[in-house]
Image (cartoon, rainbow, N blue to C red; front, side, top):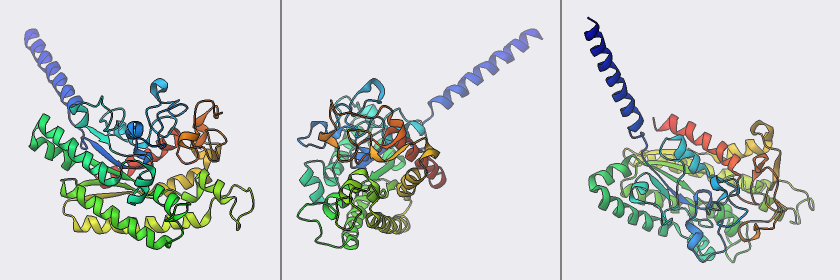
Length: 359
């Protein structure tokens, strides 16, 4: 009797170990994340480009593990880093152009995003960064690598189940709609938004044609509340001189664009069989941070942590520039990009939406 009991206990122990092994090695429902867009999803693709839009120098990355200025335009992690961690895929989403990314790492996702890029080809061209078309070409290259290593069937299955994150558009409106380029002020905000939405629709269609089915698309932030835009706005004739206030019209424009974007995603989901379109409404999240900062542990909402926090970005945020002591108290790291703490709050919203719409 004792012998049978021991045998049964041994079998039960073996079964438990087997189940634990299966549960810890099983692939997540989303096996990979591929990101496209601008600096909000660029973990270092710009490092090797001849452009001033690079974040691979201190004080960028000062709160990133190892205090490494990886090329992320923040003091630490991006929302896509938190996203892949939350999904149980890996700790960070690396840059595709990072030479250390193996084929196995590639199969769990990378970012093709490029700081300074946009849906408008002129945006990427003027800034000397990767256009959305170039990012798509690199994706094609990545898929060929995956096919060579793991086979065509596994590659197709991977693309089908992967999440495709697109975060782009802010540079287009900042530089081409409100900026001082030759393209600025030559069109209405509504007409320019329509052009951007058409470009985005074409980009999503291109990914769908390549087998992508799950999409997470970020809207515009409250552009008028970016420290850079508030600084420029304070010198406008219609403003109260030197007062730091959000530029209301730019925020209204951002909401108008986001409304069109949500309509686009609804239309695409209905017209593209088996597709899932998730809208990441970062506008509301960031406005809540700005109007209710203590809810998130923030103390400074109108300025960035780097330098004066008014104009510094990229090449102007460098070693020797005074920075705040605790970036977790700030929404913005420089005059345009969120801090690691703000990206964490944004990624929490991503997770809630993914749970709601993809599962």
